[in-house]
Amino acid sequence: FSLLDNPLDQMQLTAITRAYGISVASLLHFINHNQDEMRVQYCQNRKQTEDKTRPNNFLSKWKVDPSKPRSPVLGNRSSRVLNPRNSVSNLHDHIIVNYELELVPEFQAFLSTFDISSWNELDSTNAFYYTDEEAAIDLKFSALKVKHVGLNHLIVLITHEEFFDMSFLNAFFLTYHAFTTPTIVLQKLACRYLSLGQGNSVQRKKIQLRVIVALDTWLRTCFSDFTGTMLSHMSSFISQIREDGSQGASTNLKKLLEQKCNQAVSIRFSPTQRTNLHAYDRNPTRIIFDYKPLLIARYLSFIEFGMYKEIKSSELVNKTWMSEKDGAPNVCEMITRFNTVVAWVASTILWQEKQSDRVKAFVLFIEIAQALDKLQNFNTLLEILTGISHTSVWRLKNTLADVPKKYLTIFSNLREKMDPTQNFRHLHKEVLPMCVQPALPYLGMYLTMLTHIEDGNANLVHGLVNFHKCLLMFTIISEVKNWQMIEYSLDERKEKEKEKEKEKEKEEKEEETWSPMLLSFLSELPYNNEEEMWESSLRLEPRTKKNEK
Image (cartoon, rainbow, N blue to C red; front, side, top):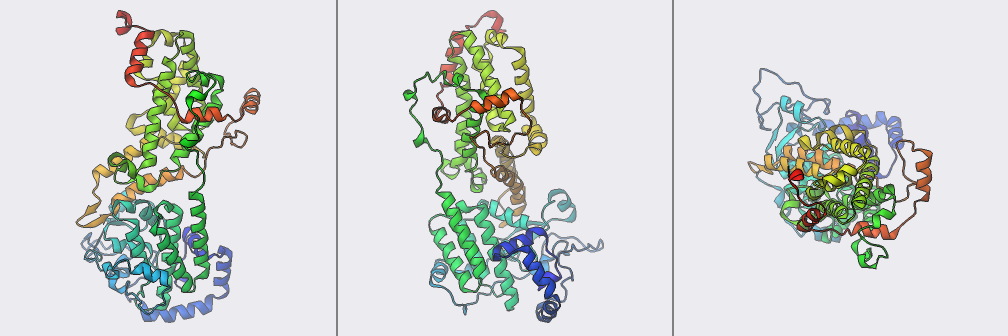
């Protein structure tokens, strides 16, 4: 009923209809034909439960009286956001567990694993909000200007019965690993689901709907959080939702859970599928010369995107990739892969004994880099450019002198495009916004941004969650996750090229075929260590007084 006075935005409308398994058109049709009757019943309920100080339009921003002092403390400040002061000023009014509910045995067993009274935290009713000036600068995507807040308060905000902010909900689930665990969040949502609000059954149903939407969002964005006991607890939660009469919502959640479980066990190209390098019938140091640059670029993109898409949001908080490899296995795999490709490129050039072969290797890698640029694979592109620029390779002045100027110009242009100045600002602000997926950005750029946020902001401030930090991290993590949506294809005929290729290039693409040997080779690249590469470089072109200068 409250939806009549509080118009929904498209994201909220989609989330509600998706949770209940109905179409947007059906919901709007029902409201239009039952509006008068619904409004009468809503007004009757509202008179009994609504605080007289609550504004008529809950989704409008409150005007600030300049004569009144501005305090960041929730209990003393004038409301300047979605009126959280009146709506969550007392969490005890929002979490009164209904022990008279009929609980399914599985859900009851889940509740017995923790103390429900743990909801009553000392910091639950405290919160700090942005001033209007701070909000105008820092927050442009969320109507909830929360800065520092207790965990219970956060749970109430993401499941509040009268306002909804999808970006706030996503920000919570993508960053909560920085200050709590999946088990605790599920426990808090269970407490919130069992709440009676202020004793009104209609309000309780609204809260339960918000909890269902939160569970749906959690499964879609961070399914990797559900392992072992978390899966069984979620299943019991869904059973309880069905028992309470929300059959459509429970059915959709169950289907989503099964779908995510099936996707999790899908086969991924793994090291166990690779072939031993010694089994090749060709020299591993020259195998890439037998294939065209575009095909090699496609295979490299396919392999590295397979690693990139496995990165989870939990791996991007608390600088996990620096402290513990087990906590961020996919990020660490991408970092290791970057160093491997750089060493492989440099080693391959240095393995060529003849200067003409080294020039050929230079040209080939520049052509591969050019193809990677067309495929919008900037992570592997930087690996190739870094390998060519390796100290042991770039000192080969005689070899570089024989490389055609055409390719040196291409190399120079690509290096300019991947300019690392100001943490790859050109790539991040000008190149990536113009890209259409599939694309693979340079992961190190995002890791540097996250490191700066981590170093400059604490997880807790005065015992409260520093959600300002979470919102900053959300902007970066959501961008990382966004590029995971569309994968590269090994079949070039299925790839959508942004520019029309020449007829000759199209004919060459048709001739390219699947090569398990090349895919296996590019997955397990051979390379020399730094000392071996330096020795090879000195042997190929010994130091002279001229080149030492």
